[in-house]
Image 1: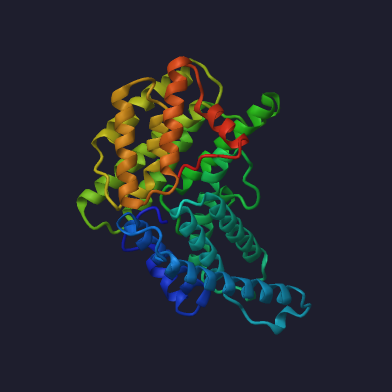
Image 2: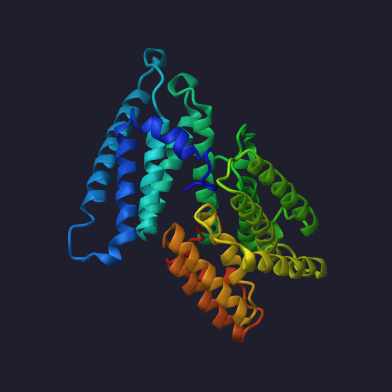
Length: 371
């Protein structure tokens, strides 16, 4: 759920202290923990038993507390004298909803994940609009929440082909920026350009050149490396792995953009170079639990760039399976299924576009989710 599990992991520093004062958040944490234990051990247990009851019990309690919170907020919002009410904890309910969404995706239910994600987003917008006296004076918590929910919604919007409405992450100057956050902002812009182009290319007003995008992605790479310098890694190998992930995100971003921006000789040249530079670290990287949760996007993009090469296809499968073993199954088997379908399509039509195929899946009500 966090980009890099380090000593500075906000889930360790911020979430647990809040949970001691928030029943909704505590129940959400317990439900995620129980669900995680279940997903790791279900293959060893009889699926007919009631082994799922622990996380289900905690989840129902968390939902009850969240319902009570929303009722209280609704009553408070109807009062005209806001000075009569002290600040209230708006962070814990958002975290609780976000964690329940994480449980849903871990259990393979992307529909429920989307519902919880939208609930967290709505509460976050409410917090943003509230007078400061209503919220906790915990700017670090608010930044962390905004970045986590925003990034999740970016990944959702890429393959549902629906615009990301509401607050724009690029409009915020965070004091403590999460690693890879700038990449998420660039991917969001590319996804929006792709949607506009698909609807009516003549109406796209903010299309940028591949050269300008290279500059933006290079800035994102520098910012991410700077974020990494402030993190305390458990070993030198972990820091090397982090630097490798930075390179993977950089070239995955360029390859995604090459399918969105105007196709010309320069764009093709950039894509050819980035394709080689994406597969080299993907082949040598040591997939560990420190970085596994970050690799789904670059591995997927690599899968769309195999161009009939069986060796590269096998590498993509191998790396995705390693990610599933270390950070959970989630929707990743469907990503492999999608890639297999795309590889077959591309063998018949070398010019086939994975974005076009993803749009077909979305229009059929089965969008993929690249997380």
